[in-house]
Length: 93
Image (cartoon, rainbow, N blue to C red; front, side, top):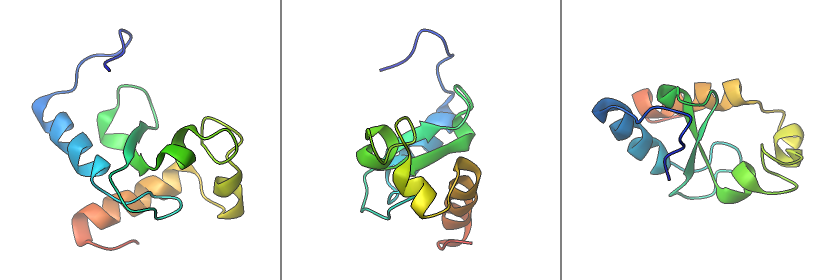
C-alpha cells in the first residue's frame, strides 16, 4: 500500500523495488521473496531486502528490538552495501 506521505515511485524505482523483493533477506539470508525496507522513506534506491521477521518482528525486526541485527553486528548501511554488491556482482561484498 502506498503511503500518503511519500511520492509514488518512478518506473525505474519500481523496477528496483521488485528486484530487491526477489532477493533473500539481507540479515538472516532467509530465501526470498522479501519485503523492501526503505532506509529513508521515499528514497527507493536505498531499499534493502528483509524477511518479515527481520523487518517487522517484535524481537528481531529493525522496527522492533533488532536483536538479530545486533547479534550479527549489522546496520542498515551494511545491508545496503551487501544488497548493492549482490545486485551488481551476484555476490556479497
